[in-house]
Length: 125
Image 1 (cartoon, rainbow, N blue to C red):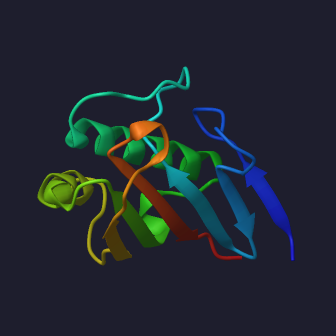
Image 2: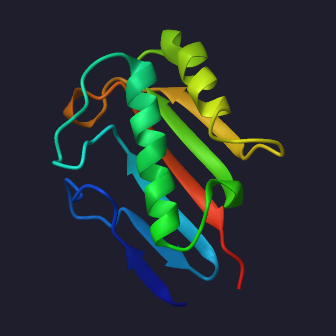
Image 3: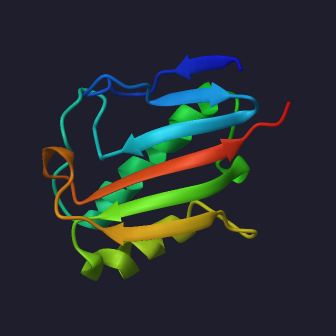
């Protein structure tokens, strides 16, 4: 098994790889709305979702991948009432056939973020 780490726009806030490639799959760790300087984007969940997806897009591109290769996403929300706002933003980044997706509400997210998204992409061999 070959593992290769990739680093994204912001330094990780813990002991983990923002993205790691294993056997043709790219696993992108949960991303919160961190700006390039490592600070959290405050504001509405729509703006946070857009920054998270832009950061994920950047991680994918660094790994030679794109959003079209994403096969699974998991969205964590601090408030399920934000689902439709996030869904609207999400629909601008993914197209049919859409990745499989799970969305759950959690009690809290790192740094008080309103959203966190992780993805798995298939790069092939």
